[in-house]
Image (cartoon, rainbow, N blue to C red; front, side, top):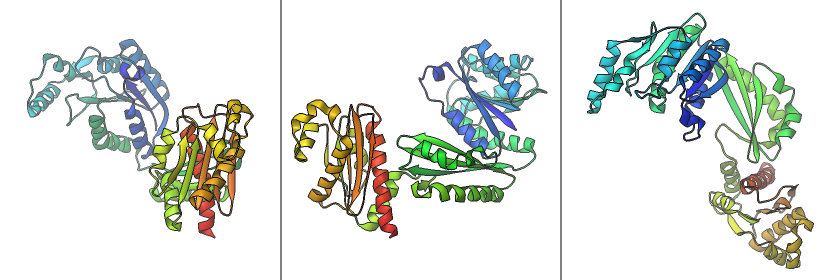
Length: 402
């Protein structure tokens, strides 16, 4: 079964609110074996909503709409669904009774304009909204099915769980499911992962895909099967191959964060961490460092001349930052950190307009990376911090393993 999700509301297009409904619906439908090929957003315009529904019906078995079921003039989903499916709106007195009862429960007076919410496309299946005043509905046609849900997340989630998912399961004639496993990597770029598992990413079931984030990359394995056990088996077989090829860079699964995994290794060893961040806008990195128990932020500022002075270099060299080797500076700073703080592992980051140097160091090994973009990028502190932490995690883990 192919489903398209259609979010309705001009406020979504203007960025006034974030569309969390589509993501939630997609996750829930994925888990029952539904294909989601398109997510569409359209503003509060009757003609455009109608056209979007018709376009969705042309390429999907089921269209799920959210929003536009309220009592105001800009709530146009009912009319649009009726137009798109070539039918009239019809008044359902039982729906008006439900709306009136809901207002009575809330202890407020129902307005006259709420009466319009009792009009739904002719021949549609009404869906009770026990948490709100907007009745929902299902329209079944030869071309496809339209399911209209409220835009209020609390109401949408309740109706999806209690009514829509059972309805879709029955239509699918089985309990086919889709399961996913996310392997989280750090210390390796998306392109390097792609080079190692590109052949796996051509599979159709299970599928293997990548999602890059700031300084790390997720590998998602998704399997479709008739039973959960079968899906688990398919995922396990694919995961074994992925781990064989990039396992040294996989720090966790699901919602695990690099920070918590790295902290776990430090606690296991009883190690002390020292960090130096030299560059602009390091507040984000300092805040992140505060999550790591026992970490020492030896220097976190934008004082490049101060860094040069600490390393025995001429501070005047900072006037020509483009001529500096930031990677070499980060190496020297990491060695100073270990020497001055007696830390077991050190991370030194030096980032300015002309480049970035990152070094992780233990008493046994050093890892460094150099990049051509500098610290004025707003993501630089988190990006460089993740890379530094990833390299330190790998070094510390090797010592733990030994």
